[in-house]
Image (cartoon, rainbow, N blue to C red; front, side, top):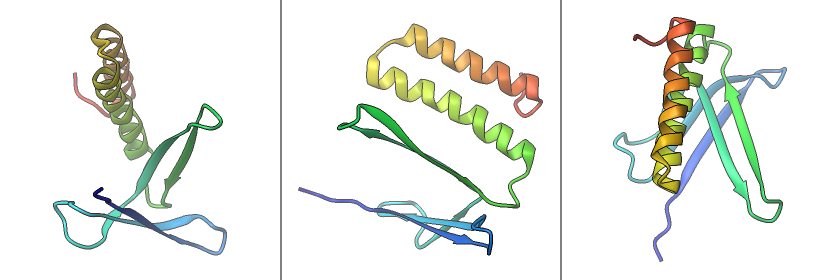
Length: 110
């Protein structure tokens, strides 16, 4: 069985606020650590039948960047939902909502 690792390294300030988020993954196009201003990680806990989340962002993540990041995550969620369930109609509704939200917030173009 093949294994693959994704590693996150979070540098925190004295108040435990992220200052740097670094990640690396086997098979990534980039070699070594990559910098990021934010990460949203969702895991399915099969024992609890529930979603676990880790949401982190750095001090220098601007509000408009977070708005765009959130809208893009909703749109991407639609793609994942469609692949996993085959429910194109509901995926289209999720996509439409994400795009509408981004346009209304001024972070995505029509």
